[in-house]
Amino acid sequence: MKKILIVTDAWAPHVNGVTRTLETHIAKLKQRGYEVTTIGPNQFTTVPLPMYPEIHLALLPRRRVAKIIEELRPDAIHLPTEGPLGWAARSVCLERGIPFTTWYHTHFQLYVNVRLHGFLRPVYNFLRRFHTGSARTMVSTESLANVLRATGFKNIVVVPLGVDTELFVRNPAPPLQPLPKPVFVFFSRLAPEKSPEEFLKLDLPGTKLVIGDGPDCFRLEDKYGKKNMFVGYKRGQELVNWLSLADVLIFPSRTETFGLVALEALACGIPVAAHDVMGPRDIITNGKDGYLNEDLRDAALKCLALSPLDCRTKALQYSWDRSTDEFIKNLAWIH
Image 1 (tube, rainbow, N blue to C red):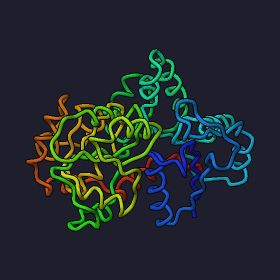
Image 2: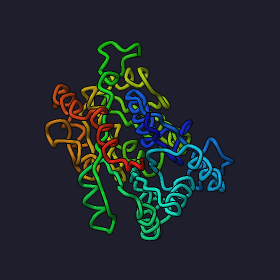
Image 3: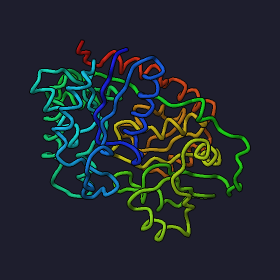
C-alpha cells in the first residue's frame, strides 16, 4: 500500500476551498487503497493569523514534521499551503533530497492586497519562492497556469477540480419556507476578498439570500440585514436545500483561482453571474450557463432566462474522480 503524506496549514475545523478539496481528494485516495497521513495545525501549538483569526498557524513545527517524515517514510509528499507547516516540510525535503509537490490554491497576495495595499509584490515573491524546488506545482485551471508561468513559476501542471454531482442536485421540494421570487444567492465566506458588499448593495427584485459565515458576518448582517436574508453557514443536504430555493448565484469575488461554489451552484441548475476574471471565466460559458459582466445586476437579471439543464450539464463535466486521477499522476513518487 502506497503512503501519501499531506502537510497542510489549512485544515478542519476551518472550512474553505482548500480544506474541501483536500477532504475530497483524501476520501477518493483512500477508496483506491492509498494510505493517507495528514499533518495539520491541530497537531501543534498555534497562533491566529493576523487579519484571519479563524485560521491558526503552527508554531515552530519543523522538528516534529521532520520526525514524522522520517518515521513514516512516505511514498509521496504533497504541500498544498504556503504556511509554517508547508515551509517546514519543504525545508526538510530539500535538506534530505526528497522530492515533493505543491499546489497553488489561493491568490493569497490578492487577499492581503485587499486589506493592506502595497504588499502585493513581496507576498507574490514569497509564494513563488515557496513553490520553487517542488517537482511539480499543481493548479486548477489552464489560465492560472499561464499566469504563473509568465511570472517565473516552474513545473506547473493542471489538476482540474470537481463537484459532487450526486449531492448537489436541486431539491424540487426543499423543507424550507418559500421565498419571494426571484431568489439571488451569495454563497461564500463573508470576508473582504470575496466582495460580499458588492452583492449586498445590489438593487434586485425578489429575495437576496446570503449563505455563509466569516469574519465580517456580524458587521454585514447588522448593516444589510433588513434587505438581505442571512442564514449562516450550511453544508451537505441542508446547503443543497437552501440552494434549491435560488434562481441565480451572484459571485462577486475577483480573487479566485477556481471557485468551487460556482460549480456547486451549476450542479443544482443555478446559473452564475460573475465578473470576467480568473475562476469564473474558466468555468462559465457566457450566455449559456451564466453571464460575465462588470455590471452584476445586469448579469444576474439576464441569468433568469438561462436553462437549468445547461447549468447542470456544465457541472457534469467536472468529476472528482478525474481530478483524483490527475492528482495521483502528478505526485512526485519517492519509492
